[in-house]
Amino acid sequence: MTIGQSFGRAFKTDDLRRRILYTLGMFLVFRIGAHVPVPGVNPNALSQLFANGGGFFGLLNIFAGGALQLFAVFAMGIMPYINASIIMQLLTLVIPQVEQWSKEGMEGQKKITQWTRYGTVLLSLIQGTGLAFYVQDNGGFLHPGILTLVEVILVLTAGSVLLMWVGEAVTEYGIGNGISLLIFAGIVSRLPAGVQELYSYLNAGTISVFNLAVMVILGLAVIAAIVFVTEGARRVPVQYAKRVVGRRMYGGQSTHIPIKVNQAGVIPVIFAASLMAVPLTLANFVHAGFLQTITGFLQVSSVWYELIFAGLVIAFTFFYTAITFNPNDVADNIRKYGGFIPGYRPGRPTAQFLERVLIRLTVVGSIFLAAVVVLPVVFAGATNIPNIYFGGTSLLIVVGVALETMKQIQAHMLMRHYQGFMR
Image (tube, rainbow, N blue to C red; front, side):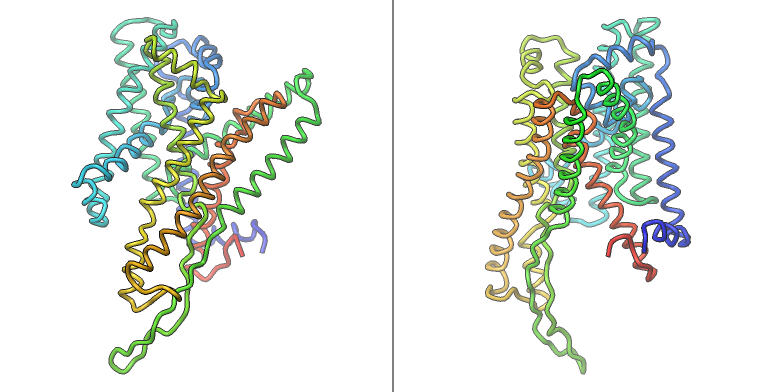
């Protein structure tokens, strides 16, 4: 069955068609908000300001779908919400009350979500204030003054809060993870501009056809590698003993636990990119000596930036994997249902075995993610081809989110006995 036929069957299902159309409608809202300028600013001056802002503003501009360069309502993108989510997940490790919420199921998750929203509003106000002062200092306001500052801060904050609502609405009523899909849409929307820029470089003789062909081949190889590692998993065999309940016999079958090589998906890359933006944001908005020194070390595509970025990707991979996969809980569940892993006793020995397997796989997955993030930058520097549109970070997010969304569509179709996208 072709992808076109699969889409045709998907749209024949009322619930799935409604979810897909809802997601596309929210994408439209995102793209409209990315082109509505903030009132009281000079669009021409700001376009030039952020276009010349270096790789840092270029990276944020891609994540915001070009809204930063236009200084639109969604100029800050979804980054405040992501930073708030990072803070809440870190708090689960240090605050017992938050850790208890994370174990209370849906009710606890609602409390964590509520506090994440509060944190998003606070971070949006802080980031919006810094951005507004930066624009004012560079002559971006038509009528500088306190009223214009307050207006711009409120509009930027409202834009980020609205994007947060859009992301949560897509997660609940649409297809896939709404926050990841918004970042996906922002990156994909900038691809035509990247292609046009590469074409202009080719016409001007800045890059050669050979370099461009090598870049395309490398990009396809990286995409294939991302798919291979993302789908790769270690199947841990589990044997369930037979047990009699009443007059019926249960168990006795063999199954397996799939432990992915990249258990965390693209979340570590998104988290690391958001965290790297914090010191660079402060350095661009606050003219302090030590912050300017940080700016010199952490310029996007510099050696120090890429090393720290890769280190954060590895750290967040281990951190997020530890949150999403708990070997002790898995071992307890296996034991409760009368199962065991061949060669290991139920309980603590099983948990220790799962932990060893998980650590080894996470080491491979984290190093792979860090390599994909860093290697395209090294290649871009060697060939003089701009990396900002087609970097490893963008490829990881686009391919990873696309795979997860396809799996969710397939799951909805399989629930109705339809053949999915992947066989």
